[in-house]
Image 1 (cartoon, rainbow, N blue to C red):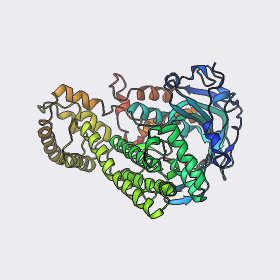
Image 2 (spheres, rainbow, N blue to C red):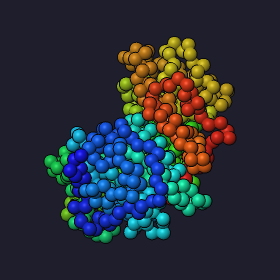
Image 3 (cartoon, protein in one colour):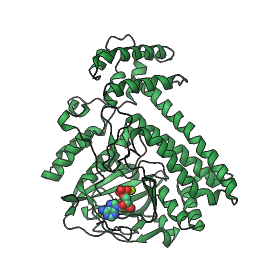
Image 4 (cartoon, protein in one colour):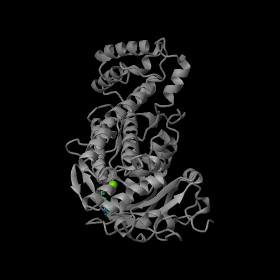
Length: 494
Ligand code: AMP
Ligand code: MG
């Protein structure tokens, strides 16, 4: 065992950044799952978070030696409205460690009891959202999307009061960092330039060390986050993922997907799809995510203005120039990724229209997002097996426009250097067979919550470990929901 694997570097930033607080113990915790592969990757074997650690560690009943648990302070814009006082109201940062490759990571536990930031909340998490976060975040990792990882999940043996009594759960999750845009906003709102500087320097030191050489390191930090968020949101769009609560407090400065709440993957394609029960105006609808990315980055830029230049007009001009780059950066990531989904290794200007036309046809035919791309990746150049596509489209009369689209696509493919098989393999590598479909997650949660049966959860988790590989016998997991299985709304579970 390493003497003390915890770095607790966030604590060094000062008392304004956090509240020191231990998790509140729970009565009868049981381990649901522990992520051995992640533990290996992070080198946890020699630490108190290893595979044989007692469940009391992952329930917060025992704080490992060397850990300095804290609740982090942050603010945030929720649905466009500034809330100065958010913070970890039901989570604690156990500390930082370093992976064998020297990468720093944060260990966070959600559902661990009240903190100074709980406001009226009970500080707890229901089991359902814990299982949802575990499944979706691990699936995202396997799909190749930057994300928090799930290390362990437990049931608490206690009930939480929501719309009804529900079993409680705690998830231990790992991120490069849990610093959010909202963390910067917290110090901006207090006019605390010294705090902002310390926070920015901390992020640069820990996670963006290359930027130390930059002429203006804070402008370079803005640039890096713009690039990271543009790339991240483009990946969400390419998979039909809807985060659901893109409030600035849920947007990571490490540019990973964080704070899985009412998130969902689309089944049939609709550009303005919303699942979250609290997103009444569709602010965080599928097709609005790139715009909201820019809105959130603008809030981040405002936080950095005092650091970018002494003269605020100069700082504003510099930040504006950077923010304008976001649109191009996003478009480039989106189009390159979408082209890869269509088997195009090169990107031409007219490809945007090709992609958009496909989405238009998918929308008017209720075509399943994931299956459309997966089955496209099975088509041959000679059109001999186009039939596999057609049952995805509702309106047989409209199939004409889809077959026209296929002609255009094949013409475009003829400009590519790749052979048929090579192109299909390339498409399979980016078009998943399996995604964590809402109705499958719902079934896993129902079995766990209603019958303490975790087998449905484990079986689904297993399939999602290899989302790009067709798994014989697992065809049911590929299918869109039957009419009675459709999940129309998802909930935060707070
Ligand atoms: P979230 O919707 O999970 O991103 O949370 C938004 C804010 O509400 C954060 O400050 C959370 O810590 C806080 N919060 C959410 N649920 C609870 C709860 N059950 N108890 C205390 N605070 C909560
Ligand atoms: Mg949050």
